[in-house]
Amino acid sequence: MSNRQSIPDDLRRFVLTSVPSVPYLEAVLLLLRAEPGRECSLSDVARALYVSERIAGELLQALVEAGVAQAGGAGGYRYGPADPALAAMLERLAQAYAQDLIAITNLIHDRVQKNAQRFADAFRLKER
Image 1 (cartoon, rainbow, N blue to C red):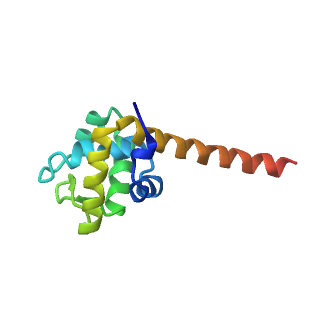
Image 2 (cartoon, rainbow, N blue to C red; image 1 turned 180 degrees about the vertical axis):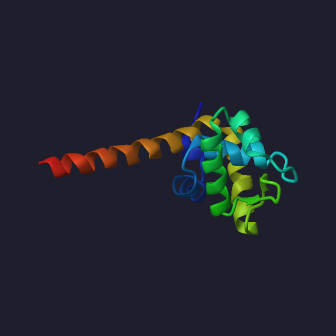
């Protein structure tokens, strides 16, 4: 059974502040990190994650900007955390995801849902 309390506070903060979606997480942990020396193409990522190439491109660009991935010379992308602290956090996240996928994905979904609700509430406040 899933237990969000089993996610350490620092890892929970990392997920809440740095992981915008489950496909983003899966691009990092299941695809790029699985074969760190391999360059994945845009179509590789799209196919593996069951998303459009446009979405895959956005995910990969976000990963590069976050310092998680590196763009290669031939249009490919590979796992390449910008520093050891980020690499260590991603390793811990990978372990937590493998142990309790449901808790991690629920944490991401809850954050996304709360952000959407805040956005909707902002419009509701303006209408009054």
